[in-house]
Image (cartoon, rainbow, N blue to C red):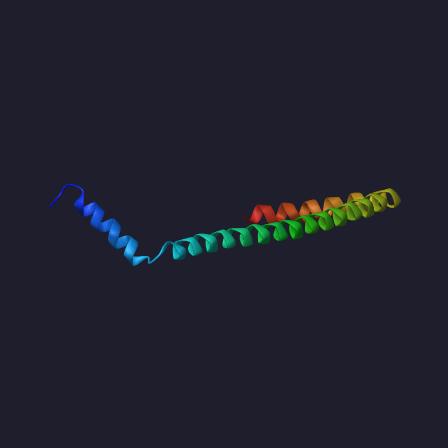
Length: 96
C-alpha cells in the first residue's frame, strides 16, 4: 500500500457518500437561513423586552410619584407605614 493511500481512499469515500457538492451547498445555505432566522427572532425578542422595560420604568415612576404625594399629604401615617413594613420584613428575615 502506498503512503497516504488510506487517506485518499477515505476522502474519495466521503465524497461519494455525500453525492455532489450541491447537497453540501444546500446544507450550508440552510444553516445560513437558520442563523438569519435566529438573528431576526433575537431582534424581535429584544424589542419586546425593551418595550416591557419601558413600561416597567413608567410604572415605577408613577408609583414613586404616588408614594411621594402620600408622604407629603400624611407624613405621620407614612412614617407609621414604613415602621410597620420594616417590622414585617425584619420578622420574615429573622425566621430564615
